[in-house]
Image (cartoon, rainbow, N blue to C red; front, side, top):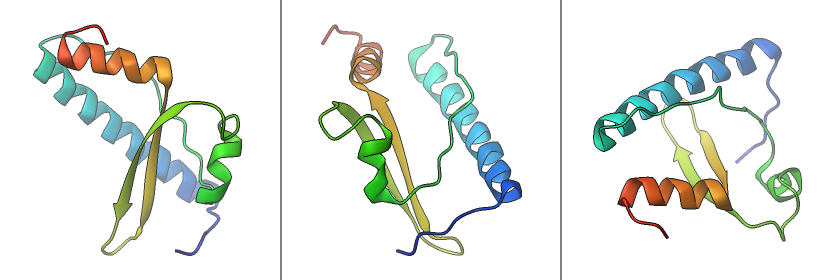
Length: 99
């Protein structure tokens, strides 16, 4: 995949799309759990995949990531990254058990 740099307008569009997607995900999660889900504005970074470990604190820092590949009229990838504590908290909430 070719790495492309985005201008401010396109980056703002990605931020808006991700905010909408985050809101929809929070609404769905809230419905699944029967609890209120609070969200914050997502942080958007457009970077080459090989730069990600260093940007997040180095390869030795434990993180949980979800990688999505997108194809169609627009192709690319999305990497959602959570700290270890955020990951455990999400698992605890989803399972109703302390992990």
